[in-house]
Image (tube, rainbow, N blue to C red):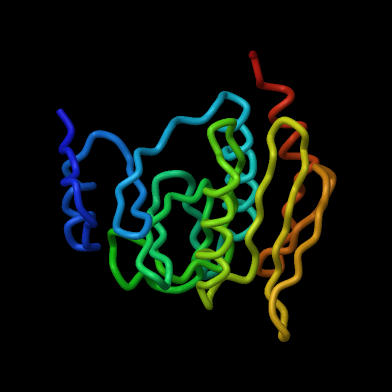
Length: 185
């Protein structure tokens, strides 16, 4: 049986204890605990295909790639489980990351506009993040936010985009082709 959250706002310390005892994954947003839903087959295959490319491309360097199950603490105390995050620094706390350089969210039917707007605000508020991407596994639409000297630039792309990460070009076209070869539903 999983632990249940209390009714009021939860501190980071209480959340981390709660999450360790829980059988399900939860995010922490403004002190409120939110149950995570599972992804579709296409969603999970795309996360895996992108993850494989990143692990292979960044091998031998200082960066570590985490899919699905690694918490990311934002500057304002929220905790998310991005679909993929890349961190090139030592973790300050073994229970979560707080200085990712890349965050990728593969969209799910359960994503709401408000949820995506919250994530955008909180992810871009992390000084370490250089690239934040959302990828729609159905349409292939990609939104890329890149940090530059004067702030953030966003651009829309398609599944044919290459995205530079720590000197490595992520080949989204190949990731989508890998998914098409495996998807059964």
